[in-house]
Image (cartoon, rainbow, N blue to C red; front, side, top):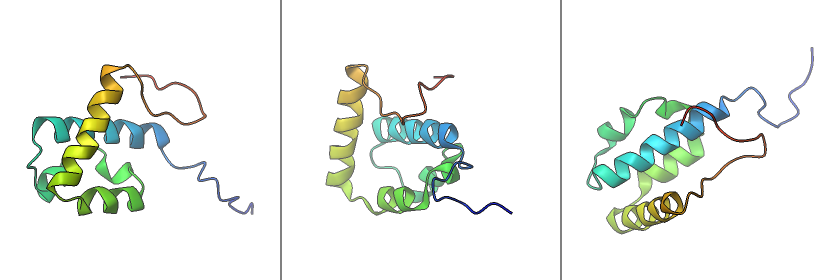
Length: 90
């Protein structure tokens, strides 16, 4: 039986990144969302737990700051991506 080398190769990274994109849309559309709204984001559970906990703990000012970053990046066609290549399906 092979041991996990710690790279999380089995994690559905594309789904997690897409879910994070949907979280960014939620930030933009409804900055006053509650946690239930966040939990209803499609594939939210695919986002790594530590990232989800960080998102869930943001206060109103931090949400505005994160939304500003998401918006500025998207406006400049700059998207966060892993080293596995470009995402498809966006």
